[in-house]
Length: 244
Image (cartoon, rainbow, N blue to C red; front, side):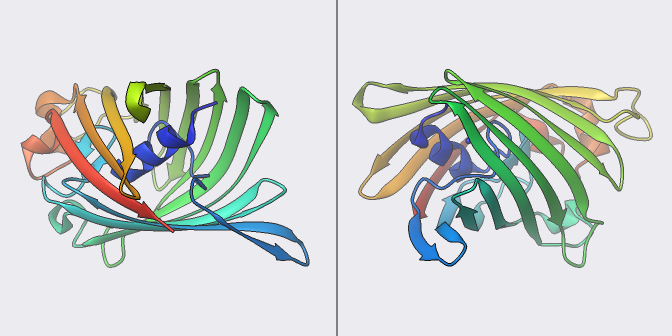
C-alpha cells in the first residue's frame, strides 16, 4: 500500500493518502491469540508538510503524525491515524483523527486487493467525512477508488506505480482525479481536479526517509477550499518515520 514494503512505508510516511490502502504492516509484531495470529504496528512520522491529494492540510507548516494498526491473519484489519492540521481550514480543528476497518488479501504473489471503510474526524471542527475504499495492486501498479458519501459525495480515482531503484531506493509515481459532483465552491464551475506526485524513499539508520514532489491543477479554485491560495501549489515534502 504487488507494491514492495518500501513503497508502502514511503507512501504512508508522507501521508499522501492516495496510492495505497490502510493495511500497512511493514514493521509488525505478531501475537498468537485464541482467535488466531494478530499483527500489531505503530508508526510515528515527522514531515515538513501534510499533503493530501496534492494539497497542504497544514498551510505549509510541519506535521506530526502517528498510526496504530492491528491485522488478523484472515486479512481483516483495523487502525487509527492522526495528524495536526491548519485550524483555519478545518472549522477550528487543529487535529485530524482517522479510523478505519478493512480486508486485504492476495490472489497471487503479484496481485492483491484492499477493501476498507474509513471515517475522517476533526474534533471541534468541520463534520466528519465517511468514505469507502477499494484498490488492486498488480505487478507494481495500484489502481483504486475512494467514494466519500457523507456529508457530501465525491469520487477519487487514482493509479500509482512503485518499484525499487539501485541502492534500495524506492520510487513511487501517482496520479489521481477528484470528482466532487458539484462545483468546488460558490464562484467556481469546476467539479473535477487532478493531482500527481513522485516520491523517493529509503530506509537508513532504522528510519524510513522520504521526499515527495506533488502538485494539482486547482489553480485559482484553491481559495474555494483553503484560506491560503498556496496550499494547492507544487510542493516538496520531506519526512522521516519510525515503525514499531
